[in-house]
Length: 598
Image 1 (cartoon, one colour):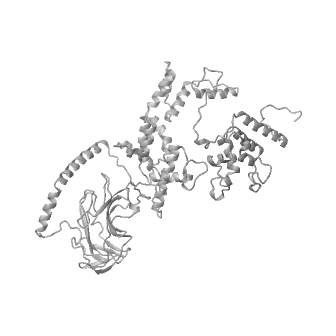
Image 2 (tube, one colour):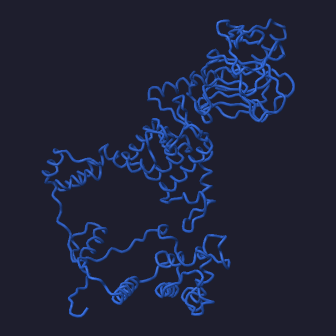
Image 3 (cartoon, one colour):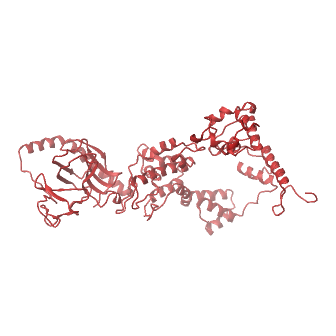
């Protein structure tokens, strides 16, 4: 470069080429300068990348490709081949610096050799004690001492000192303080996301008293807009949306949870409580409505009802979504990798992932939301206003009192009923809405002996066979008998269903009676009697499975014999008994205030 003019800084405007010799000198100079500027070599920034690039293929997390039973991606593995402070006695350094290709690592067939600079980096790290570190993102943030500055009167805090020190190192100085009109504009956008009004700007510019800036800050922090602005980032992180997110993207209302987040910021709810309430507020002792509402954080995931969707597949995806969101929002980690495998850097193993998964996998929920109804997928929380909630509490107190009275006279009533029945009274049924004997069938219409104007209807041509009393229908699973709206009841309606049943064998699952528009496409809303693994079950359902009442017999239903089955419901959201005895187990119970509409 003889005869040329140059400076210490490269001219980015110059278009001339640099010869390989000069490029090599420049590269070596820059590398030496970087290493010299750093007091020590860091494992996470300097050493791990070398090991990952050159060694992990044979000595990393892939057990199938592992060699020599040595894991250099783990601290205990590195400790086997490295002696801190002594490169000469460290097997790893001896191998990477060996001149004999039979001893050198990586081996020639790996087609990846370490450079002299990389070998020097490993040597320096060992000389300095071979301190192992986790991935830099998992190490506690250091708290360095604030650097000295020439203009000691300018910094208002330690952060200012770091900024000023860098400016001074570049030969620069801080900009002058911005005009007040610009300051209040910055403040307002930072704290509320909105520009200041002209009146607010004028008031701040005209405020000559000490503390004017602080008063603007206090006013903005007290504004409801502060909570709204602060909440926006958390709502994004918590995947808040006003729709379900898949296919037709149907509307759903999560606004009560959104409003709670805004209130939490405006009320300055402590951060530990902010997280605890959202993760498990319903498990706190005597949780408040806000604490239960906060757990809607776990219900912000997308949901689908697309035709052909596998309910269980999507339910599992919802659980995984909660685990992933827990990682990003609470731990600052992406844990998705561990759903399929251990990751070489992540502290969360696949075992850890599914341990977390188990916490979120105990929710009674469906993988699909309802297509034919507007029922909110369970679990859900009703949000009555204050007056309505107070009235509901009053009514519940009355119900509790009456139920206590009823329990007190229960034995007397049972005794009186037994005495009445022993007298052989005439047995009559009142309030019948349907009675089908299948003795009169014409053009698929079945005579309803209780109401001739509302006959039953056969569909898909079931076979008429001899029954226990009169005729019966033989059901194949594709056909049946419909009563239309005759047997449509609400949750508070008492009703009884009774029929004779004969089954040749133990059924894994068979629908005996059901009143609902659809299965998952309608949240299974309605009621049903099923055979499940040979046992009878009866259910009243608002949204299956989390908002429903269900009982199941302990023993199996008899086979190859006629069995009389009756389900009696008194409108109380409670059920028990089979053959008049307490021989069933309660599986689910409807929560308070849930309706079971027609």
